[in-house]
Amino acid sequence: MSEDSPPEITQLLIGWGEGDEQALEKLMPIVYLELRRMAGNFMRRQGSDHTLQATALVSEAYMRLIDSSRVNWQNRTHFFAICAQLMRRILVDFARKKNSLKRGGDRIQITLSERVEKPVEKEEDVVALDEALNRLAEFSPRQAQIIELRYFAGLTDEQIAGALDVSSRTVRRDWAVARAWLYRELSSGV
Image (cartoon, rainbow, N blue to C red; front, side):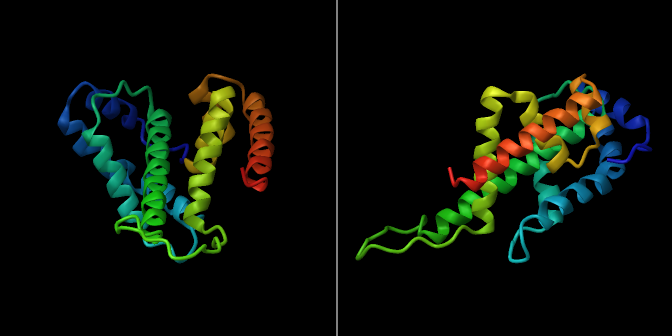
């Protein structure tokens, strides 16, 4: 998220949160490029065979945003953090659905023999990361938020510190610990 984002974003977010539909209409063109950049970051981590495109990810996040009840937006960092969380959920839902369909989730299954499990694919990696982040959030919610804000939203340490009301040093320390924990969790195949 760029530091030189227009200051009116926060005012538009507050207006939208209070029910002003015109504020939303003014807001979206301003934040679209940043949302598209975030979606591009998400999609680059998904591999070249992923069928969901960044534009579709932004569109789906937008639809979920406008369908949600009124949010008490704090500032633009809060907005982009929520958008990152939505995009993460969309990708996880997409991966789960795709994996279900690969296994015949839309058909009646009849097992004729034991099958050999396939190696882990990119969609399954998204689901594994989501599950690991959920486990991390159970005992360290702030560390899980830091991973989400940095990895998914692309926020800087300073932006995360401002959003979570902690120091940048705390963010860096929690990032290092959480990253090591996630690496261990994802490497062990849990």
